[in-house]
Length: 317
Image 1 (tube, rainbow, N blue to C red):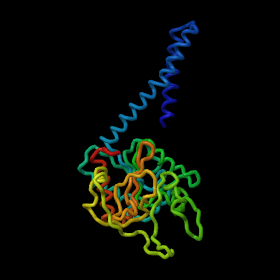
Image 2: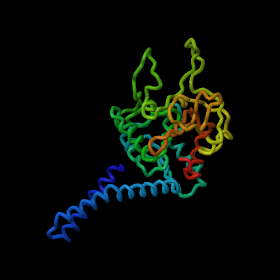
Image 3: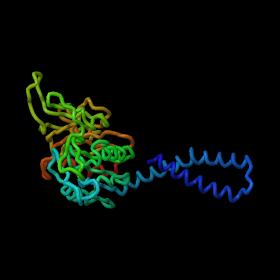
Image 4: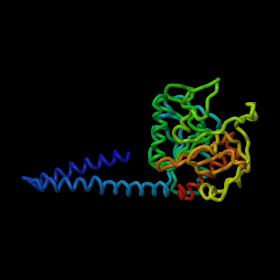
């Protein structure tokens, strides 16, 4: 987007300057052309980059002061002639997310909260939430068009929140009523959790079911674990342990993942149920948490974290 903006502005300026140049100099000399070239180079390599940086800085400030929050509706374009997006490992619908988040943020003025199809994802949003857990609506199941649109949004400074896992399944709601695995790479009817877009693009290795050294199943996720935060975590998303000391872990981030910022930690440091992952100029907020209902402590915890971030004007992002 920045490169497009730069080319568009430079092309417009060249047209305007050439028109002015031709109107002033009826018989231009080589000196005149050299001066024009120098001016164009100055504008292209100095003035336009400065303008883009100032514009980006102002835009970022506006998004913090006047937050615009999007919740994915589950549609690619709209509800007409599209199937309903399925949910995985979360029981909270996009409508409930909208209602409860609106209620949670009622004390915050100048906010804008919208339900959006994926076609409306753009850099004007401060935060976008995917309420469908491990599933997301995908326009092109082969080229991953929507996924990379989400990546570009984050890269350009956005914050994208994943709940109940992330990017394991996708669904083209324009053509299918069911979701399917993004990557199918099984061995003995099992698939490694690193064979996912979450790992390939963000370097996050999620937790799974627990096995002993003999390969016997100890527990299955969702798995209840004790949690804690240090002071640095609390400065970013608030003290979430006042809400609960235990949560149901599902596809939490493992310590072997790369470049994550802990927000919530499992007591024995086996996993990190809530993290921020810097990506370009923005962040992926990955909540490896199972949300059972709108009254669950897990849902209240996420609502409180988002409220804290917005209320503090994204000071740590």
